[in-house]
Length: 252
Image (cartoon, rainbow, N blue to C red):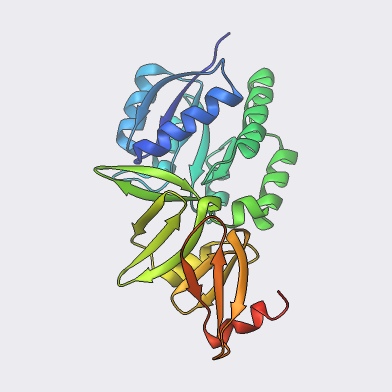
């Protein structure tokens, strides 16, 4: 019997992204509807009676947690959110799974497998699975611990930019420049917040205003003043390293 689902998120591009991942991991699953807030989600669930609802948590109006309280007797709920602090409350709402954004194909595959097993036995998630999930949330893997995608504005919409495609970040007034091989974007996030959200093994802060992707560094040279300059692979920009961070390149 074909399973059906609805996707609820106030960001259309993220709904589209999740639908694409689901089409890869579970092609037989039919997405029968989408909603942008909790009220719409409840109305959609009551109308369509889906088997599964993929719910964001922080949305306009009713939150995903509030919507789940009205939907748990209709369908299974999987929360998809950028925030891990709601995990315990989510499982109290009898959620089948709790996915952290940005959702990866590997993590979604686990959720799909869990849903399929849950559907077969037509019961709630097992105590063992809950313990496994809570342990994972307490010790998240690197893919979930650090930001993997950036949301950048494109006209009236939003597109996702992989963090691996970024050459470097640079502070620009109240914004941060995001430089890639294809150009640059501006995001309304401070350089400090960016640094707190990305993997410090992959991204090095080389100046108060600059963070560089280590994988994009070609080489570094030291000027007669003692400061290092960083040259990038397949990119013309040359980045200056402040004295504070010069020690990062002494062994290069």
